[in-house]
Image 1: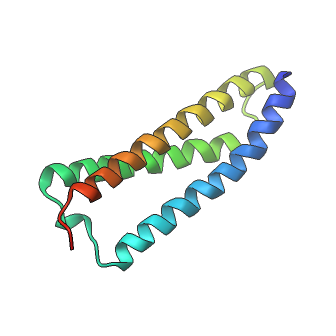
Image 2: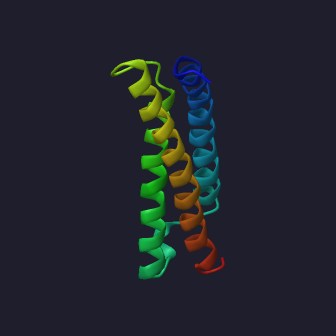
Length: 111
């Protein structure tokens, strides 16, 4: 694919992935908080794991959102490279951060 077509695809799919990532995070956190769960119920080590995971997820959503933003900060080949990398990094961070946070919840006390 040419840099122009790749860039258009990334900006379109980045917008879609951004909406999905925000929605998935909101539903997951909403269900947890709605059930009465709070990070304070976790032991110190698990709480650290949860907060680190939550922070990584927040950063990943920012990266995915930036990838989908239709504003080009530089020329097309450079923007193509930058947006491709931030989309890949953001997706990886979303998966790793979400897994870490959910692992902390699962290892925490049962209610």
